[in-house]
Length: 315
Figure 1 (cartoon, rainbow, N blue to C red):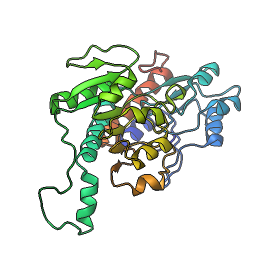
Figure 2 (tube, rainbow, N blue to C red; figure 1 turned 30 degrees about the vertical axis):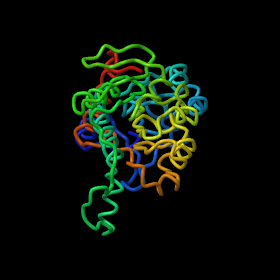
Figure 3 (cartoon, helix red, strand yellow; figure 1 turned 90 degrees about the horizontal axis):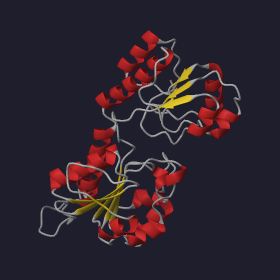
């Protein structure tokens, strides 16, 4: 285990396997570095990576004949794993789709509402005892109901976000995706430029990886309306963070809600100083029952592989 998972998952894994977990603390639970990944590939049969573990091409190159045969990733995103290099080394890779969908969509709605209604800024004002009482033009934000929402990436999570926006707030849904989606609500597939130009709210819900690196940068922010807000619950490096800071600083967009960052956990001082930005510490799946479901799904992949059965969630 790369990092300690919820206790019921750890107990179930310990009952089934000879389990080793890295020694970390709640305050210093950092991802596995290159040397740790090399050692894991060399010394263990099955590995449960977590977000950010350095299972890149270099790790596999340093272990030409790995003992490991499965990377059962804890999480749906696996851009920290070079899947091609893993397969070339004879290692299968799995993930935990489905378990994360609803919780991540909830966080997207949290960011939409907090940013549109300036909730973070307002709470900071109250905590600082700077609130002098209600008045008609205080803290005016964007009314979310009925707005046009552009979903960039219409997979499971993107659809769950769109569904909440449509059924909960009567929003018009447009989306950008490689293929059209058959959904149970009105949604129009558009080219990226058109979707960005029409949207009041843009939500980024694409997978990470080389194919989406800096998908949203200076050119794309210039396509957005000046009153629009931008929300990212995908992966940090899908956004050119410097371009986002520039767009916010120059008021080319009205605000942003972020749960992920290009170089997390590092967050630029410019973002920290901006009142029109909502910042969360990668809370997408941070609910106990969700993390237990993710852990159990990873465990199902481990057990199936160990028993010689097809893994339920190959990537």
